[in-house]
Length: 149
Image (cartoon, rainbow, N blue to C red; front, side, top):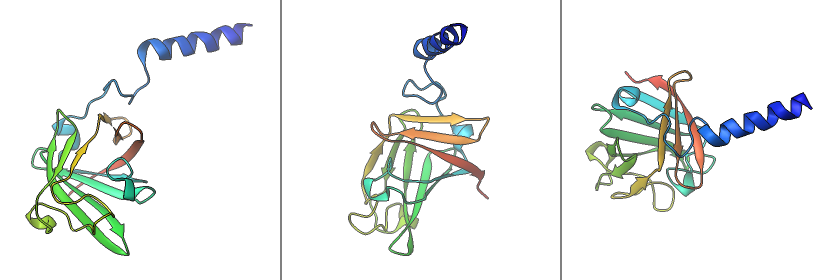
């Protein structure tokens, strides 16, 4: 009986306060959390449906106002670059087919395209695990961080 009461109390607290990294933005990522960091996600589904189960690396620079998303597609490393809206969790791919100029070199249907907007509802940073959790409305994925040189 005591165990059952402990379980009910725990569930009640989770409902009342929410779970870390949930859609209520309990740990929204800041510029200092993201700047000059790279996060490796086991799946890029939240960034583009064609990247489901494709390892995806997202890097931030320029005080976390720029991003670069990389994934290997058709045995070639592809890249999409653009601007990142820190407060909005909004990735805007540049208009070029050359990522160096701000854009995307993903073939059509395989990843983010020039002028695409990736609108995530959650970008939460966990300083304990140095990880970034993103949520696109249906998919939650967590990427592990490493410093970018």
